[in-house]
Image (cartoon, rainbow, N blue to C red; front, side, top):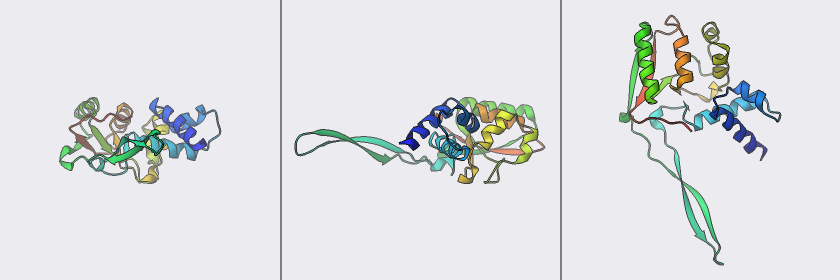
Length: 191
């Protein structure tokens, strides 16, 4: 019960856009940063903000409620999950965007962010942690967000939302010559 309450509180703050460290400071009950970070990352994955695999591999479960009646006539409903079909790889398009021409770069990011249809490959992590060099370019809030994610889970893609858009614009071309965007035809709406 404690675990469910904790996850519910963390999920609430994730929806408000809080970083893991800010969530830990807001909680009314004791919880380690590592535990908050794990729940925070799980919530971002569940909300399809982060992907640990290619986005076209996404297949959620669709809940269906089945009506059951026992021998005495009592009616109850049971939740049964049925898998949704996976999106096809052909529904997705990979685009490499050069960071050198800042005007063109920002235009492509703007377009992708406002459509809500793109994910960016996470180039700023080695699969274990965030590159320390980013401290030179990112604000404290942006670093708190990136360090609040457990990269050990193998996360490879991040939804191009406003937060990631500003992080990408803050990183200079010297750090990364190009980024990889994965776009879909359908608008992604996390949560």
